[in-house]
Amino acid sequence: MIKNKILMTTMATITALTLAACSDIEEDAINPADPDNQVDMTEEMDEAMDEGMDHGDMDHSSSGEVPEGLAAAENPTFEVGSQAVINADHMPGMDGAEATIVGAYDTTVYALSFTPTTGGDPIENHKWIIHEELEGAGDAPLAAGDEAIIAADHMEGMDGATATIDSAEETTVYMVDFTTTDSGEEVVNHKWVTESELSAE
Image (cartoon, rainbow, N blue to C red; front, side, top):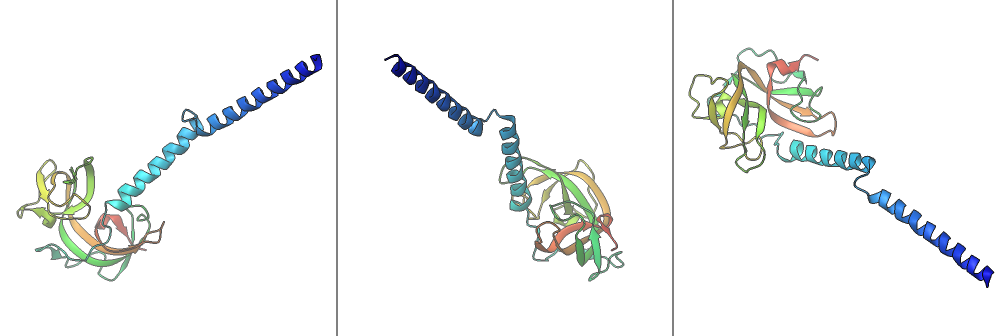
């Protein structure tokens, strides 16, 4: 009788310990308070957001059409058909990519901020919009702080948005073809890269 009680008590203790251990393992596996799990979840969310912003909203390629009145550069540093290295990170895989010059134009180029017409968070310091892609901008270049309506669709919600000019520069801008250095995506007629963002091979 005593042996049976001891045996039953021992088995109950082992069972309780086993269940407790399993419970701890399962809790560790799904516990959102675990710092390691938080890091993994944060990294995955950041990656998903980055992919959505970089690839979902931007039209990196274009038809190659240019706005009416845009003047081709008479003596560009990088001639149409030549190659150059891109030194800009407007999108992943752009910096360091070898570009083929498709077009070169003299204009005023703007970095600007706006809220997409489709809603969502404001876009700050977007690069680049050229003078000819602003609605009713007139002949004179705009300056930092000026407002204008965008007449370009480089990304969703851009066309028709009211923008504030962050910076303005008179320079040569280039339309380029390139292959991204990270994913191997073929980008054609990309608008725009400024002269200072290109270097000789």
